[in-house]
Length: 119
Image 1 (cartoon, helix red, strand yellow):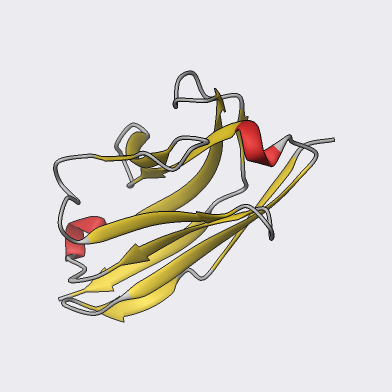
Image 2: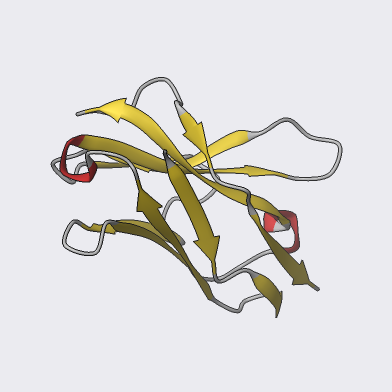
């Protein structure tokens, strides 16, 4: 059974930082591409960042230079370091699996963690 569990959400003032983590089980982690999506109220879910099985990363333009995605294969976890947070970063952030190798179609979703950025 695949499980993705996010941790690290919370409330922060604009300009602050948060680090999200995602613990995984039930997947072949070393081969998996993973990523982070987010969904703000009234908006569709959007891809924030992804990381391929071999470590290549990709970012949405709206987070480039501020967010960093990483993975720890030994712990079967991924992380999202978020710096210089802005109020429009407020959303529920979801950990996802994205196939094998390079990130492609989303297979599994975590339950999400709330990030709230106040001005």
